[in-house]
Image 1 (cartoon, rainbow, N blue to C red):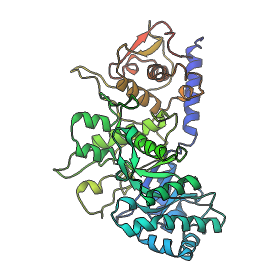
Image 2 (tube, rainbow, N blue to C red):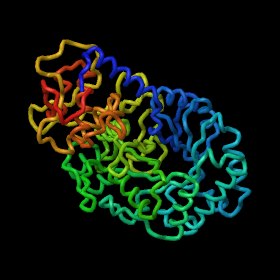
Image 3 (cartoon, one colour):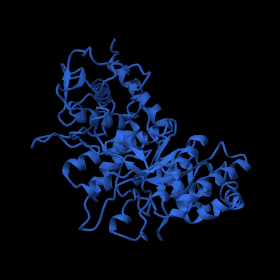
Image 4 (cartoon, rainbow, N blue to C red):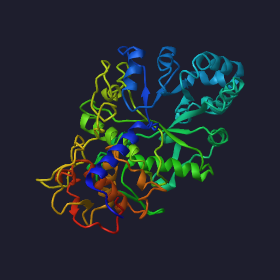
Amino acid sequence: MAIPPLATLVLLVVLSQASCFANSQSFIGVNYGQVADNLPQPSATAKLLQSTSIEKVRLYGTDPAIIGALANTGIGIVIGAANGDIPALANDPNFAKNWVNANVVPFYPSSKIILITVGNEVMTSGEHDLMTQLLPAMQNMQNALNAVSLGGKIKVSSVHSMAVLKSSEPPSSGSFDPSDEMKGILGFNNATGSPFAINPYPYFAYRSDPRPETLAFCLFQPNAGRLDTKTQIKYTNMFDAQVDAVRSALNSFGYKNVEIVVAETGWPYKGDSNEVGPSIENAKAYNGNLIAHLRSLVGTPLMPGISVDTYLFALYDEDLKPGPTSERAFGLFKSDLSMNYDVGLSKSSQTPAAPKMPAAPSPNATVVPSPNATVTPSPKPDKANWCIPKSGVSDAQLQANLDYACGQGIDCRPIQPGGACFEPNTLAAHAAYAMNVYYQNSNRSPTNCDFSQSATFSSNNPSEYCYF
């Protein structure tokens, strides 16, 4: 395929990048917890959210001040009925109608309520009465929405912990406890088109297995990967493995069309001296690399080419939460609206500030190029027309390079199914495409074709890859 002049190429990439960021990144959401006494005014929070690429907010309740402040912002809102409301919702249809009339009807559609979650992690609470009442509560909530002609516009679901899976390792073994209650909830999700909401936390997986290789796997950093011997899929990060375990469990029940929503995931940036894992470095790596992974639209091995709606935990620290220090240190932002650390969510950033991937293990190793590179063309280096992976680079490194490059705002749609460069459909080809476009879009500086010393230059168009 003919290569356009550099100026034309740069212009095309810049325009596609602008288009990519202009489009709604509807898969990025955030949890807005309120167990705190120092939170900003709801109006200030609404303005903060509008300054970011966050498109959805999950509330654990129905605070009218927050719901009202988000009116006419276009931000999707998830509201919640508490576990304590479940008995009344299950046993009294009028309670459900009154709940909808009080918490939904006065605000919709100005406030874009998209989902009502009935209960939080009920099925792993050990409270048998609540577990048996959850489905009737969801059904009555759905009927109440139907009664005001909102049943097709606002979905009803419940939020589950990863412990709801009877098995999750390897991902292909994902399965639910086949109880009547669980079957009923999944059947409800399938019949109403509502999502199955799950709380995967690689942080807790690392805390239970605090080895360096586990940390790299949880933080989307280069690692040896984990092979699912049944599917022969090598997973390069814990998030994909956990989400695909849920996908496998849904598929095993015949619910291949039930959408998955990640209702919570995050990493604390500080903790007590005896806590393993909390740090600003780890929190920034997890959340930043997760956002880059979502923006790449690579998807998971069992759900390629799509990014599941993912609600980061959390918008602010909640200073009144009990427990260890880490419980009060998940916030992306401080109560004064400044960042605890930057993961590239601000719209004012020219490119997302995803953390740099660690360099190859060498005392002189360099890191992935700065995301603040300019796009002004410069004289092209001799014999450096293309940036490609070195031979023998591991799949884990290729995946990390792909996630990083696509996460910097370049247009990776051509390597999605149906795109001009989807074929050849190999990880090496897709990574090569992303690495090269990133390099071309970053002033073609040699430092922007490093990728932890896993990239090299080519003066000839490599025929096995797709470039344009």
